[in-house]
Length: 174
Image (cartoon, rainbow, N blue to C red; front, side, top):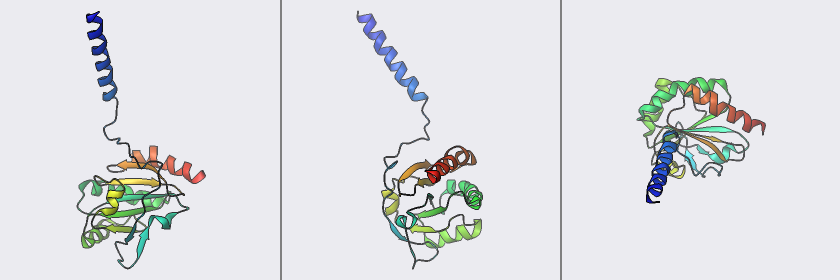
């Protein structure tokens, strides 16, 4: 009897570990999925006198890309966003996170600007509300202002093709 109990615990432990090995370490569930996007009102990066809010986007499916000039992965992602923004599949908005205005604008002028508007979150307070713990991060937000997807890390052409574009298409048709 004792032997069977030890064997059962061993098998359960192996099954638990095997299940853990099948998980993608890049997929971190967000508690914000299927919840309203947190409210913000921030000055725009290029014009501090203009305000951008997620409420400006009600009725539209849109992407909010959190980025910063100091972020190495954001520079890796930047050419992908530039090409994607040209496709007009979905409007891409930026949230310049914990950056200086000068550095953020300089990066966009040097490498191109994929964003229709970029909000400026110099202190990262809005990023905290969105659960940002590293940049880049991207959110797909539906017409009612509900977050439907969160990408942690750089967007790649594969992620666009297999995750974001099909989701945006479905949300635009729904």
